[in-house]
Length: 198
Image (cartoon, rainbow, N blue to C red; front, side, top):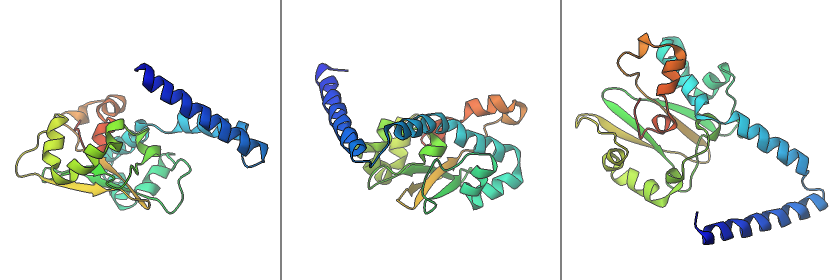
């Protein structure tokens, strides 16, 4: 990181510390509670959560149906909670098929299923990705190394304050012969966003 970037981060941290101190002094927040929540968030949000759901769907058709019908409930079945999201936010799972490839974006800001996909990558929040993936999804996917057959339709799902999306990628050939742990290794965060395939 450049020296100027480090300096800006230091200034931002100093401002945050001042605001926290004022809020704590006025009884608005409890610093220990904030630290506890940050620690809990760090230990509970991971792309592994989404990968667990995908791998279960690969191996259990009934679970797959439940996941596509109500992804939040299907996540809860595996103990993967919404990470403190409001109950107004609904998780939707969209499945890739040979005919349709799905990709997720939030064109207005950076709404993202943090609890199920882990921290968002910087490119997901960039204006370039948010605007280009809608206009030229095939071009953006190609930049990630994902080239699809011409006959495959690309659907772009726009997240919002009320809805979050995750992609259920197709299981690659031979996945059924692998252990669950090996299958989990195939499902990356980028697969869950839809810019990559296992």
